[in-house]
Length: 109
Image (tube, rainbow, N blue to C red; front, side, top):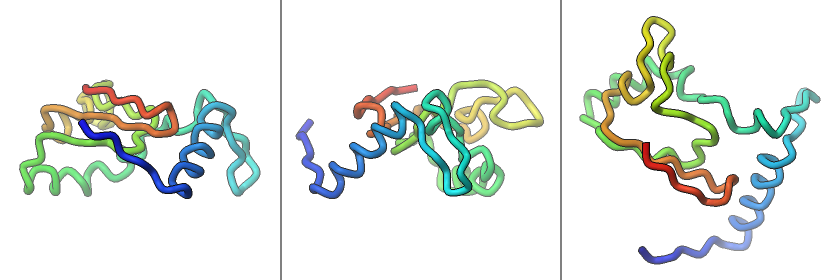
């Protein structure tokens, strides 16, 4: 696989995200987000019902979750009405998480 090169601005942004993921950060309302909570909320959960029709209509079976933070597509209870994971809820076969702020690791779920 060819290696890609970020622009200077892109590289600086990734450095800032790495610091925020490692040390936490302050939100604009002044509240501190500790490192163990930084980028760990699965924001898609808030919009799951809007997105589900799109997944089904377009027969999406694989996902690249770029900047997915600590999102766990295989964890149960993604939907409050049942114990389904996000993978089950959206009926996807595989998910690859790509989180630059955590060392450019890729995890296939």
